[in-house]
Each structure stands twice: as C-alpha cells, then as structure tokens.
Length: 86
Image 1 (cartoon, rainbow, N blue to C red):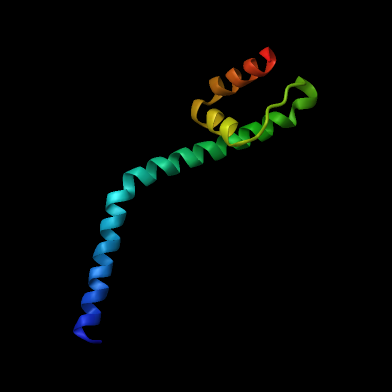
Image 2: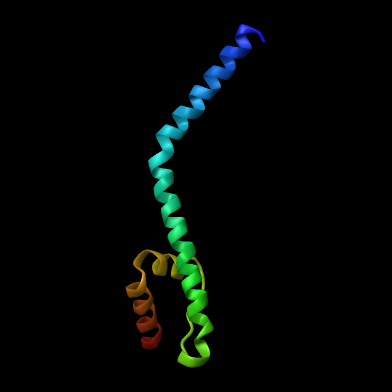
C-alpha cells in the first residue's frame, strides 16, 4: 500500500471520529425522543385495544405518540380529557 493511500485512510478515519464526537450528544437526544415516541405509540395501540370496554379511542399518529411518550400517563390522561371535552 502506498503512503498516500495510508494517509487518506488515516485522514478519513480521523474525520469520521470527529464527526461522531461532534454530533454524539444531539443525536443521542434525538434517539431518546424517537424511542420514547415509539413506546408512546405502543401504549396508544394497547389503549385502543380496550376501546370496546372504555368506549374511548385515540388516534395513533406522530403527535399523540410523541405526547404519550414524552409526558407518559399524564399526557395520555390529558388527551383522554381533551377528547371527552370535544
């Protein structure tokens, strides 16, 4: 392998490491929100399985999943109350 090729690979590796180091915290926060939204989506799906008993259903979309995932049970309760008021 030539010296220029070795230097190119070394430079590329250092650049990839630098990019990961710079964007690690913001991407970690976004991944945290994405996981919480996915959990909120699962909670809404399970909640809608009991629609026959409770006669209350909530739409499963990005906004409701985000609210349920981030706020948890109080967010779900808030959406149920808002649904009953409308």
